[in-house]
Length: 82
Image (cartoon, rainbow, N blue to C red; front, side, top):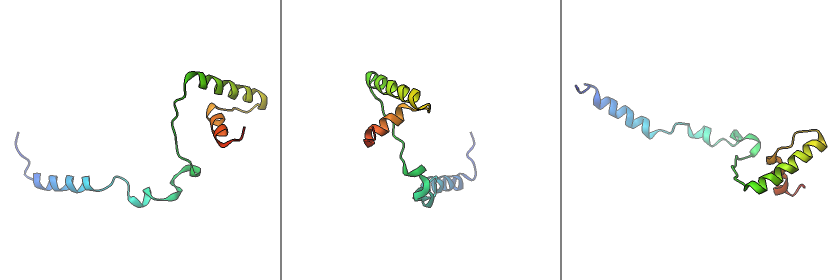
């Protein structure tokens, strides 16, 4: 395979691109980027705990007529609402 004549230019361009962030830092630091000031969190709960929370969510959905998710039940318990 023949070497490209512009290999030095290509290497310089790739090195320059690699040193720059993918997202401008001004965009990353804007306080309004988060949706309603919340942060996504992933929880893995044991099956028995999930079953209890799911039962409570289903019961509350039937009582109120509005969909209540397991996540809502967890958040309300953490906040001390219920």
